[in-house]
Length: 179
Image (cartoon, rainbow, N blue to C red; front, side, top):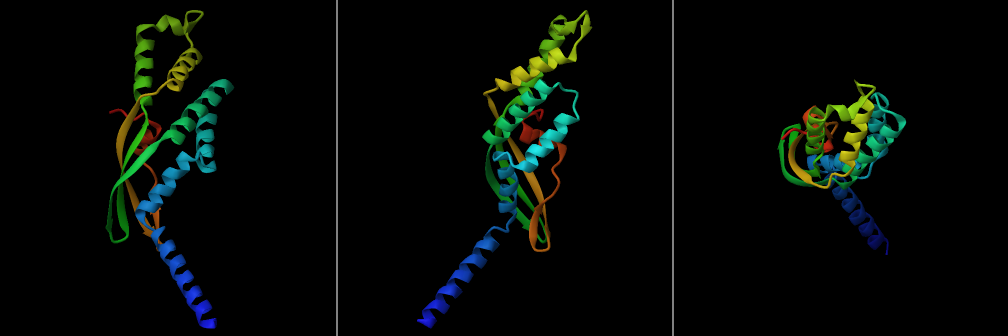
């Protein structure tokens, strides 16, 4: 009986060790980061709050902006395409599918250019009017776009860490990268 318990414990420990090492790959690290976006993790929401709080938005616009981007993150789809490891560095290539906010923003800006009087108050351009228009357009986007992102990682203390995201990578995650 004691041998069976010892054998069971050894097998259990082996499975735990194998499971932990499987979770310590460049791909699993990237998946954890992208999962934070999909689940609207507290860290992602705080970053979004910081951005909104430092923007020139009304309270209603701030709430709408957060709603639009939290939906973007929640509905984002991704597929790992490749993983390359060279020593303590790695690159994980991901195909990302997000709402095409770039086109909506581009169309809104074109509309502003062609219809400037619609965004004036007392004959003066009113940024609040345009921001409301643009947020309304973003909230109605249904078209999606695919982007490819190469995430770079560094192995630190035997753990793979995703390097800071570049502006281009963030624009792709947000769906506003100019393609």
